[in-house]
Length: 281
View 1: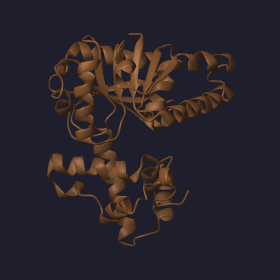
View 2 (view 1 turned 90 degrees about the vertical axis):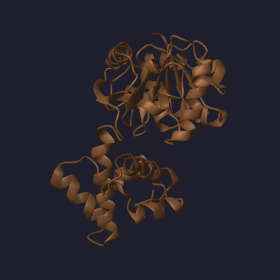
View 3 (view 1 turned 135 degrees about the horizontal axis):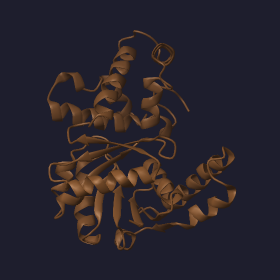
């Protein structure tokens, strides 16, 4: 595999493009918003500067990495030569299904279609294509250039060869791939989101302040970041979407999102990306 297409240039998309280019792949970064593409390239350049300052890469390598990334505002040209497509758009099932129908028509027949979804069924996404054996979950963690884990999720129809290829590819990126079966939330968010939701309930019920809840988890459980601050960094809309998937998928009340989370999202307070959530930024 040499040609990688990344769909979506937001936080996850630009991070995924960054790591593939860093490890020698030719990357097409695709987004219908041309301004978002330019901002993504600026973000990647800034992150490369930090890596250079930390000695992860040399200063001379920065331009070579950037030169391996091409920007595309149209899906067709962006995936025309892809060996692997990694979708990293909004965490909404209908939007993803529509994207995969298009990708199935536009990407080469041999191409593997991966989704960076953090909770949505790989089996459902694969069913929107004529190549379900070549559809797989490739769930990177944020920030992608730093975090080692990649959940590799097998849908009901995902071929063993597809899994093997993606696992090997993740290792080429110096990541640690973990194979997971297709179930709502997979492993990472099935465990993480109920913890975040419970922390929101504790705040909602007046058990303690946001700062106190986060301090307990950081100092008492050795978490690098408290659950409420982490929710702000993930995006409260994303947290709500994942909890809704878990709630609908398992049909049990333990996954029902806290009313405070629902209210903050309705008010447009989505965390760091909007300047306020559980904290102000």
